[in-house]
Amino acid sequence: LCHGSSLSVCAASTMGFGGGGKGAVAKRATKRPVQKTIKKESRAQEEDNTVDANFDVDETERRIGKVAYFDRRRGFGFLEVEDGLVPENKLMVHWSEITSDDRWPFLNSGMEVEYSIKKVLVRQGKAGLLRASNVSLPGGDAIALQEEVEDKREYIGGKEMRYTGSIKWYHTTQGYGFITLDKPQSGVTEVKVNREEVSGGHAIPLHSGLQVEFGLSKNKMGTIAAYQVTLPGGEMLTRETGEAREAFPGVFTGEIDWYDFRGAQGWILPDDFETLPAQVQESVTEQAQRRADRTGKETMETLHFRRLDMVDHTVKFSKGVAIKFSVYMSAKGAGAFDVQLA
Image 1 (cartoon, rainbow, N blue to C red):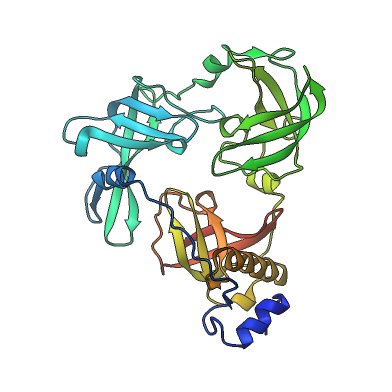
Image 2 (image 1 turned 45 degrees about the horizontal axis):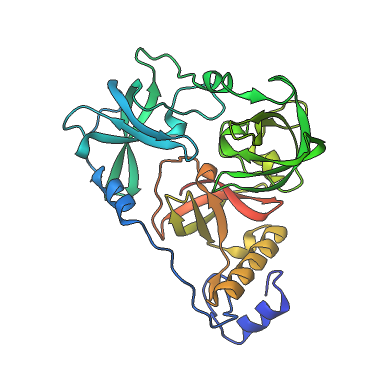
């Protein structure tokens, strides 16, 4: 049974290319892919805060620290913490751990904050990483920096003026894209949208053609960009609306085929491919065939997922770990969500 595969995939599998296994897709070319270089300093920085799996940390204790720096676009930074607490006295903080009502929470370098420490699982039963959690102002108040930034901007038509358009394209991982305006403004027909201006509270993916509403601001160079992007009418964006997702009922099992913690995405090898909905099977097979054509390597029929589709965003999955998940179809194809340890 070729579970919805194209004839080329089906024929190749019957001839023994990559046979056996969970839905192997045939090799289609001979060109060898080039591996992406891993920045050694980034890995070293992560390893600095690596601790043994049984390392004991009081996650309820509140501490005071200062922000060393914070990359607003990428959504993470480091706190300067008390001497001897962690190597080099630098503790990583992710935007999702900031107590704030801002659209895209961030910190300013040099500001004083209150925080706790949590241990993030790296390899089940082997190691963990220390990270800052529940970051707030000293005393526990929420951090609110968004309004201060917005008050310094120059707006097209005023801060409350709203415009409409559609997503031309948007790169979720890189965190930016472009909107085509329904009506040109000041001779401009499309404007850039950055991740931090998408109203939804998470790194929301936006599919091409999605209708949106937004304000327009101009920077010192005169470049016009979108801010406070929502659905028409002001409704917050969600992953479901941003990707035009359709979730299917049921919970499935499988194992992690690959997971990139820094890239915040991975692939799942289902235990029983044919139990997936037919539409999902067809999409996964098409995706696998495209990867095989592009890389020239035998490819498995695996389901893509992002960190934000995990029940616990802090888990760093290892290859082969047993998990359970649900599936969806979106404008970009099939994927998994509610991914968690089995």
